[in-house]
Image 1 (cartoon, rainbow, N blue to C red):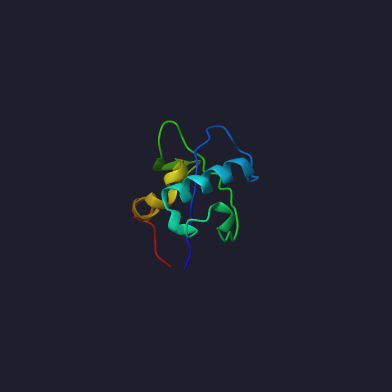
Image 2: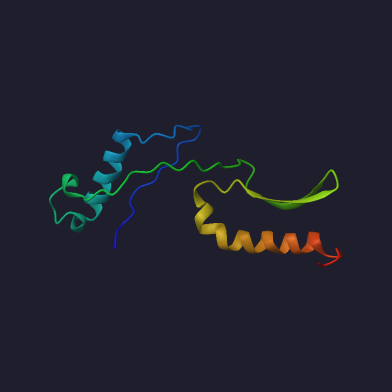
Length: 110
């Protein structure tokens, strides 16, 4: 087993490298909140497997989840979820699949 800690939202930051200062602050807050993570010994006793950076585009106007005909070809858009992409992926993928089905209605089946 393991535990994933951390995460932040930094509008306009597209740096793909880990920020060590931010990572330390996140780990410190996690250990302060749950000392059992290290047996009360501090962040130096965390067993770190890796640090990661995820760039998650966010649309200020909200998620784009719709179908559109572009030059005669149906296109289904499903993007702009930002940091809640994983949490919304099941519901949004079901809607996107439904939109694909709608776009394909009436076409001959092979």
